[in-house]
Length: 211
Image (cartoon, rainbow, N blue to C red; front, side):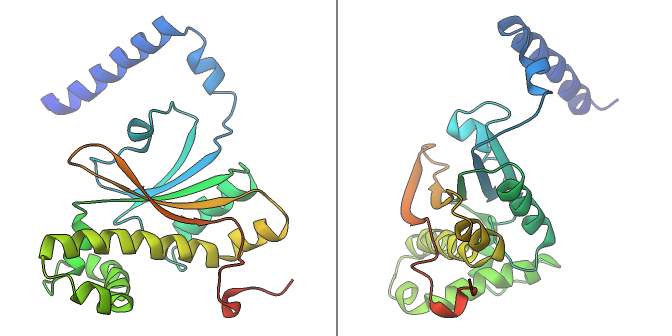
């Protein structure tokens, strides 16, 4: 058996021993169900683990991850997670968390072909197009890259607000708040982008469904 694979299994046993030593009922309580108040939509990057970043325990955050933390309205995986989180788990907060140093966003800034992922990254290029005027005025490439990371999160939060799942929750007076964060790999800190929706009041009328 490969050494790394064997190490993962040994680490699992060690983790179970440490957890149960501190709390013998941890797994029996965890197995009874989940009621997390937060849905995390984050990047699949291995350096951005939701529970570690937020200092939370298993069962406290419901997580969906993909390349560059995208909210794409034809992505049935994301929509299924969102629907379950909102209508079954009754989560109260959804956080879209991007991160500086995101490879997906970096790829969207050039014209190199990367394979099938180019079709996914094209959505990030659309974000660049929407904010081209602002981004083109940033001379420093790294600063422009970091700003695109932020703007991508802003647009994904807006795309969440457009979904029928979220709008129906608001229509039913469910307390549901959408937030945008960016995580720094350099220092481990989260930047709150101060983009928050608690209703569809800020959406253009064309995105609002009839009552």
